[in-house]
Length: 463
Image (tube, rainbow, N blue to C red; front, side, top):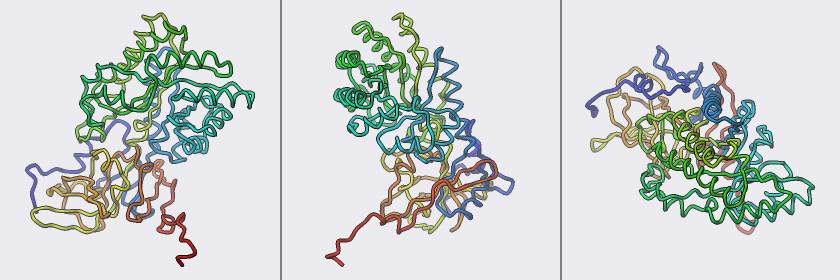
């Protein structure tokens, strides 16, 4: 076996990276516990691989976001769960119980949000290419539309007339500044962040927004709420938050001077980095807590609103990955083990199909054995999946001498894992269970091979 210079104890390593809302512990037996449930028992009962959701973590993450921003912002706030991060209907139902609004992109997410329960007054519809039928549905349902194309105003006016309703809408702003170039994006992999922001399809520049605002003000059937801004997870450098908040405040002030419009709502989107931050492409903990990002955003916005003598609008925000990221774990089982050329490959009965951002964005996840966690991790392994692609979960995962059949846990599988998962190589997607204390229940059934090919059709002439 290849010895590490500094052998490690997985149970101790887990404790070092555990965050305040994680419900993870290690039993005296060395088994990983998720709330009151043993990870190995969950695999035995529900099969492998398996997504596991901690209900307590999910609820605490939402409450933390709400608490942080409600304490910092002097007006009302609306925390809209960004269902793109994880569209499981049971998760949406929990968010509804907690009082969360919803951020939806397209008809599918609008359906999922209301299937899980939502208040239309606290839901927004996003998208750069909304179809007329989707806009009609939004007007009919009473959700707010974040407008990102001029012709959306025409359609919304038309449908508001037809339905005899007043539509609610904001416009999406492109908050551009060369100051972004002081920040290197660890996620987008660009050093000139300003050019990236300029080229992305989202939002209206200051000059374009001025013209759009006038169209909104000339539309009596539209309740023009204010502004929406979202770049997404770009960097965990807090200076980035400070810059965009300052510039967003300046842009809102400039638009007020040019148009006289006073926003009732300002929506600052999501993308809040977490303490364990796979998107940084590093296993290092992010030392900046949500409280500091919230302070940077709110303080800089409020300064600009007060300087412009503008009333403080409602604050809306759209966290997804922050709420659900560490609330979900991914469990898998060791299969074939191969040692050759001084290397060790540990195959799992899963693949990066199930955690696609490892492949697409080089996200870095903490990985541990889920049993025997007090054993010394003496071997540096390459942890791989079962597809014909490389499917590398970790190029250097320290593990004890594991055997076929042992369980492995991958942390932070809540965001963009299930919603981005694929069926490459015809592999069915895993089940999902929800843990609440020492109880667990299925919230998404495991696919079968028949499910993978259920929508395929062979023409009769080939039979």
